Amino acid sequence: MTVNETHRLDLRSWVPSASDADTDFPIQNLPLGVFRPRDAGESWRVGIAIGDRILDLAAAARSGLLDGAASRAGSRCASASLNGLMALEPVHWNALRVQSSRLLRADTPEGERARRLEGTVLLAQADAELALPAVVGDYTDFYASLAHATNVGRLFRPDRPLLPNYKWVPIGYHGRASSLVVSGTPVRRPHGQVASDPEGPPTFQPTARLDYEVEAGFLVGIGSALGDPVPVSAAGQLLFGVCLLNDWSARDIQAWEYQPLGPFLSKSFASTLSPWVVTAEALAPFRVGVARRAEGDPEPLPYLLDPIDQAEGAIDIRFEVSLRTRAMRDSGLAAARLSLGTLADLYWTPAQLIAHHTSNGCNLRPGDLLGSGTISGASADARGCLLEITRRGAEPVRLPNGEERRFLEDGDEVVIRAWCERDGFARIGFGACTGMVVPASRPSP
Ligand code: CA
Image (tube, rainbow, N blue to C red):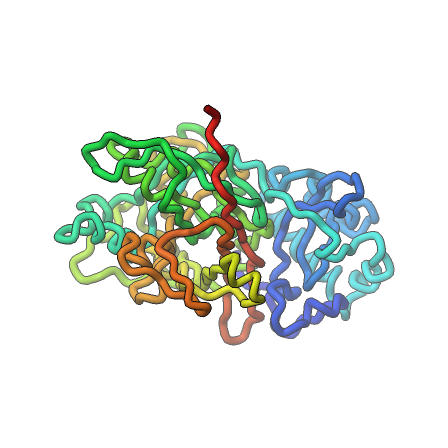
């Protein structure tokens, strides 16, 4: 994916809000999602966020606004998921992006035609419902932030925070796809086994240590065949796009259950995805070299090492987490920032994660989701979960209205936002990934 006409800073759209200084969705972004008009009884379809509107790609295809390879892509847009589009080749994704850009530009004949059909192809985001962008068959969550692994490891093993495998093998586990929910869905506080004494016995109760984890969600486009490892030099081609992911975690349930097979019910009660997928092509200007490894760190094994991936395989995306409690909402206070980190810090690139995932012959399918793992940085203001920020609850975080939090309370709303910025290019954003904690259900007697 290289920089092309769709990334030009001087592009202007006939959709006025696409030029707002603070929009996440300027014409250089063009993220894909699944929507339908609210309360209209219509079917879900694929669209592109532009300013505060949505370009209805299914309607654009029906109206004859797409041709060639883009028309093949357009034929997959009358769908309740992006999977059909993801299964096409990158040449179709590229054609759809180039033609959508021209349709939305103020200075092209294509834009002129689309503008005449504005009532058919454009909808206000405020009048739309958004769905999960993909049918996710499999969800794998990695642990690719060295700072996160070190901070968490230090809480449990102060003398030896990192296990000896960390710098060799991308650590991950299989997450739960069925409980992925779209941004805005309330998250119910889960019950589980909690043992205040590690020797037990446990009690079955609502978690008292509910946490969030700020992550990037890498969505797979074209998959890979069972038995065929994907070389790291080709693995980047499998990345369709990136969305925001909140991997809600119940730390007390996790502490009791995670040995010896890893997290299970402490994670599988809900994971929240943002509705808009920023495509790999939109991210082309924000590719950067991998973060330099510390002196003495091993070089990645050959199956994870590719010079081009090392030079430009990381992505510089800033991730911000903020929190709004019920009391803050009641008094009209804005959400308060808890952290600001960057994806560029990850120890492994998306291509390395994909290559590693397939290295044993495991296949990936269109719509599969790979979580980056909690995105934390070296500095104290870049810790991507409350476990790290409050040091396992020992040092509560103080909010602007005087409230304190060790872990999440009922009524708390967690908001993740992310964006890319670079001189010479338009700032593009990811929208929001939000979720509010609602009280635990009463267990049946
Ligand atoms: Ca996680």
